[in-house]
Image 1 (cartoon, rainbow, N blue to C red):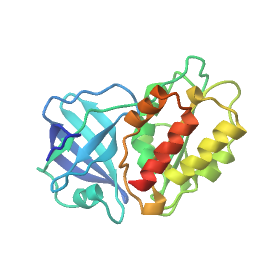
Image 2 (cartoon, rainbow, N blue to C red):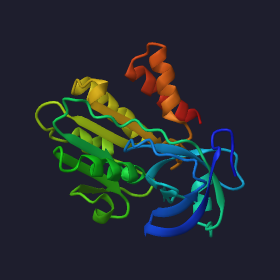
Image 3 (cartoon, helix red, strand yellow):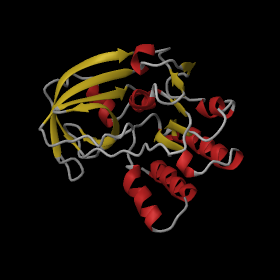
Length: 255
């Protein structure tokens, strides 16, 4: 099943439960899909019987082997399909895109995210561990999943479909000097933190990235809006990062 946004093909090779609310799909691609090498890269996914796409973080993409981790929730195009016997199904995929970029003066990295952000945090942690001091805050309804991240982390509990990441991050003590803060999760939480980081902490956009992956106001739904093109159009139009991300949040709420 392909669409205008998902011209690459892959077949589901295996499916297994990582935790109560997280499923792992291992797929074999058609050989035309190439990783960007950017740690938080995502791609568009079209599943059988659907023409609408949803966006998922790439857990790994090596050669023809693709791994996607899907958060299980009450309803949704992908989550419903992923909980069926989907092994052998063909899906459509878009070309991966990513945005994680450390500034040259970063002396530390702090990551924060909920269950939807774990794949990206795991890849980011792997890319920076050992080279920079790393702090990770992970929020899940399934308890600590230390083997998933592969690094030391502080685990926070949240009931399914809820998040308190904004309060968690607002209470953090930050390392000295310039660094990089990456965070992803529920859109309303991300709006609060984006304001906190820019207005209260005074950080510029080069030293943080805060992205909404799902909307609590519409139920736990995966990303319907690709942030990459929207960000590029905004920058070309001379808009500030705050204006661009406000438009991104609004577009997610409308989707």
